[in-house]
Image 1 (tube, rainbow, N blue to C red):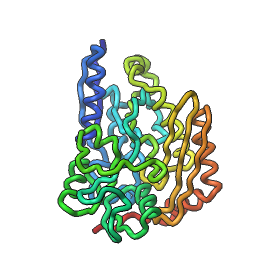
Image 2: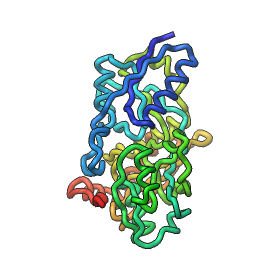
Image 3: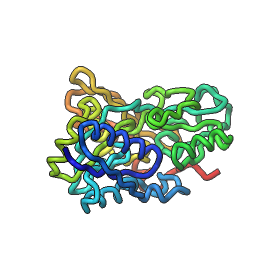
Image 4: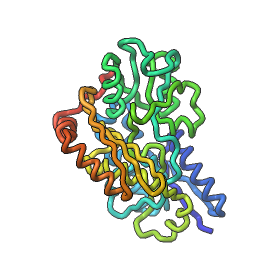
Length: 311
């Protein structure tokens, strides 16, 4: 069996994910080492991600370690991986997916609908902000950065009336005490790739690819390939007001996607299905662009982004 070195960010969630993959590989008889790598996204904690742009913010330094052969594979949250991988890398496996939906967390309120007028909700995601404002334009949206524990602590200390997080991270860490509502995908469309792990290796490293093949989940790969194809067609990263939620069933892929103005004034939604995941994602992306998505994204990219204001 092989000796494999895993590169990972150092956050609690990233380490859970890396150790999860390490355990699965050890069960196959491999010897595993873990190297923690600090990325640019881990160092910039006082600015909303949408302000600074996020292409490669959580991956660049890890890819450098891969290229330098300091590590053999990298474990990423798939939504953090750019849709255009840097030359010299490939996604060897996409794991079985955790719940890709977002969740509403609060100490006092059971649902988004129960929040009082002017309630403070924490999120630094333009995608979540846009859909929240479309649903409840009266809410006050404020930035929320930091790891899962930090975000939950700020909620528990009363800085926010509610916060929106990914179900997957809370489920993996077993920190679901403040989860009050799993938000349906037709109310808050998730981020492309949310809930799945992407295992990245050097392109052409066929031996490592063979070792990782058992981790690749066909349904998760089909669904996330569709979502990422849509995101690529729209030119977006993980911090733009684009949502994509695909499910693979009986050889077909069903996709629901949105492009939204950050202030919630306009939400374009498209639903379709097909047999080719990448072609479906691209086609739905084209439709959204034609229906007005191009104008929304041009404003977001070209004239500055209406990110939540610091409290």
